[in-house]
Length: 290
Image (cartoon, rainbow, N blue to C red; front, side):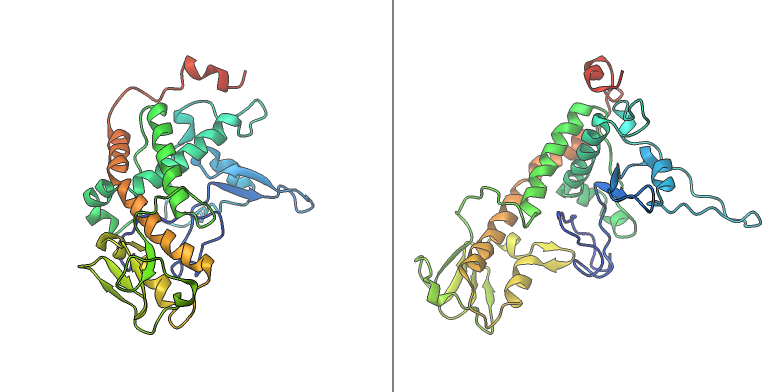
């Protein structure tokens, strides 16, 4: 929060603490534990309030209870989330298939909502002071649609993913031309500079990154300008072909992410719209335990 609110990041790798912004916390989709110290295999639970007691018993969730003579009140129990949309426990009391499906949908829906420009604008004052609050759709169909959009956001943010991206923007060229830069020119000079008028990032006197819209240049994650930081860390270095491909990919990923803004706003609007109760009725009977 010291840099203001930024849309969330996504990774399939550990990003807590100093791997992102110092002291940043990641919210996992699922939580791993061993029921007994002698167990060799790990078990998993959805990171959801529906399994609050299970997580507490497993030691994953630390529940603080005030002392008897304390004036403090215990924290209120969080309301269930997944069970709004159906039965999420099997006959054995463990998460069933629907629980895991819903956990994923809520996870990616959250990513979509927090990435929506309209959400950020409407809650700017609140987001400067506290944790984001995420509206849940009344309809499970709307939840699923929003989750699909969140998965597209995740793919663009995930360094391990290789989404299909058009090559219209983000091209390494010989300075002052539109010619593709040969490998012997892929060196970042001591003073890279961005030219907003030409939408070009001059990496050296002979190398430019062309097709960089100003909004891509200004895009931040965790308070850091993504493109500028990537280049600044590589001043004075010759880029490998993989580096060059990744640098062009940053521009294309950020462009694609920004172009999702209108769809993300619609998903946010759908999540806040009032409607019937979550659809956990007969149409989901085939997914519920007997």
